[in-house]
Structures are given as C-alpha cells and as structure tokens.
Length: 227
Figure 1 (cartoon, one colour):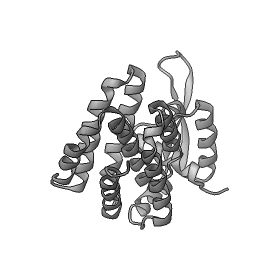
Figure 2: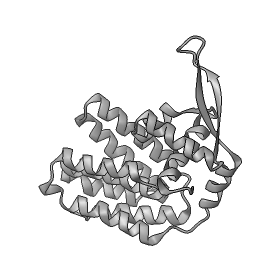
Figure 3: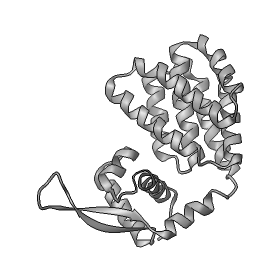
Figure 4: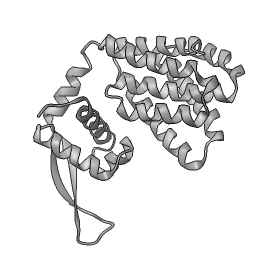
C-alpha cells in the first residue's frame, strides 16, 4: 500500500485541520472539508492509518451521552512528510497541466453557464492533490464569478494585485475583493462553502514556498487575459 495522490490529499487536509485546532480530528469534520461522505473519509483514514501517518483514539461525544467517537491525529511521520515537501521543487509538468486546464475553462466562459463552469471547477478542487494546485483552482473559481459578474472591474482589480507590497498580499487582496463581490450573488449555503474554501486558501498560501508563490502570482496575472 502506498501514499497515493488521493490519500495525500486527505492526509494533508487532516494535518491542516489539526494544526488549526490542535485537537484530534473526527472523520466527519474531514469529510466536510473535502466535500465527501463521512464513510469515504473514514475508509480513507483507515488506509492512511495502516501507513503510519495517523493514529486513532477515542473521545466522549458530548452530543450523545455515554458514547465515544473515533478521532485521528497525525504522527511525526506525517509532520516530517510535509516538512520535507515544503522544500521540494514543484512538479512543473503537473503544474502546467493544471494551470492550462483552468485557463481553458476561463477562455470558454462566454459559451458556458455560471452554474456549469462553477460545477466543473468545483469538482477539480476536490481532486487537487497539491497546495499550489488547490490555490490555483480557488483563484480560477473566483475568476469565473468575476468574469460573469462584471468585466469592467477586472482592470482595477488587476492594478490592486500588481501594486501590492508582495506577491502573497496581491493574491490575498484579489481573493478577498472578488469574494466580497461574489457572495452577494450566492445563496447562503453556497456563500458559506466558498468562504470556507477561501479561508483554507488564505491558510495555505502563507505556507507556500517562494517558487510556488511566484508561479501562482504569474498564473493570477495571466488569468486576467484568459478570456
């Protein structure tokens, strides 16, 4: 058994949740973050547990008197894995493939409905196996709303990005600005889901390497000219 891209995605999300709360993670919380069923999350965690990246424990469920629930925490092996990955070079072939896929979607927005475009990129977000690809898909998702809402705002938002003190700040300002505009067009449930994704984006981007931030910043600027 090996740590496939999908298992890595689940493990990475669990580690992020654990680092955020410093509490053991229940598989239902992981399922919610990844947009999968709780049983899919539980089965995947059992596989990752066999590889030694997480351990399980039991805690009392305060919502159900007298019952315990299974929770998971990452091991030192998982911490070492992601510590090493921060210093690894980006797989440029995989990065270009994912970036081109998002650009292709943006180029055809004029002939695609908003719901269809969002559905397509939403499915890809759940499959993103690296931090940089996840961030790129969040940027792509917000570009869909930006292009569909009002193309006139694009130039001044791009100016905000280009004049920001740092690449990271430029990208976070783009995401925050467009999210603020987009949530006004969404229902409460969708708005909450996208807000949670953006929150994860903001946590992830600060942990990217300088190389990843540079690639993502170039991707953002190219996206302004993708349609």
